[in-house]
Image 1: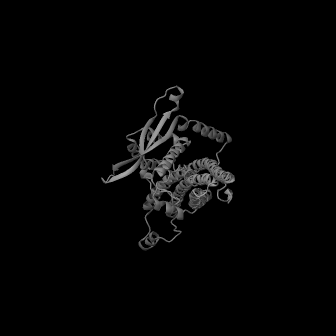
Image 2: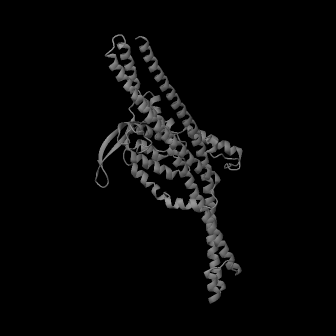
Image 3: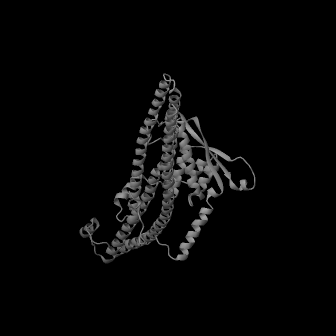
Length: 436
């Protein structure tokens, strides 16, 4: 499947325009400056180890969880020749989740990097799905480090003070997050779903992007399922070669001239059978890289949902303003264009006095003036959102194309290396047979 079939292309008419080439160049310089000043250029960030711990929940129930050691070190101190130990603190996975939820709400136009999976998905049968399994915890440690590096290198997210305190402030960090009031700004799922179905003029670029994110999630899910099935079968094929080793060893015991050759060939078969464990462990690293973009698909949809909500609010505000203008016109002219209970009441019980009409017209005019200002502000906010969102989406697409290309090439190189090792094993076995 060609990428062009999935990825929405922006035409010149669709692309948000920035008036004036000078301003466009200024924005480009600003982006370059922001990237040069990103946090990752100033401090070294790593998640160096994971530790299993026991604690108690808010309901005073015992729980077992994993804590991760975050280490940071300033590049300035290294340049000055100081070999000071890195600053370090422990964080739970739930704290990483809290940080990401805060970033999602605070920066709705950003494709926020995803966290690694909380529980293993798309596993082959010999791989443990237990979230306390040491191999899984190690892969998640790498994924959490990658998340921090993604955020620290992002031109917008890296400047966030809450993120910096997450890396450097042991206590009081959660309180600082909650003091931002971000939880009050979270859009409900019902409201988002309502906007999706009721918005009348959706932006086709965001509609295409949402369809692309669905397709991206689908193809990566299928790829991971295929890879898991191949891993299962490959594991069986390699382990069956261990039977060659056992049979050759037993055979060597009853042969004199052929014994040494058979024994050596059996040893090579044993080595071949045992090598699959390391091979599939290395494969999990590439699978995790694909999973990151599986989860990125949901981050893309989050940006689309936010735009749908803003567009729906904009349409409702415009509709309400149009209704008030019509009411004002009807009061001023004394004509009613549409049937209403109010119009029927006037016919039954008499018209309002001129003073009453003037008072109502004055109230409506004040409301219209206020709502016009609100609509203008919403239009401006929507335009800024679109401009910022597409700038970040372009940044994401460039990153995605580079990362997936590198991951797939590395996976192919690993498969070629695996096949070469298999050929070498059988070449060695052939030499053993030749010497018999």
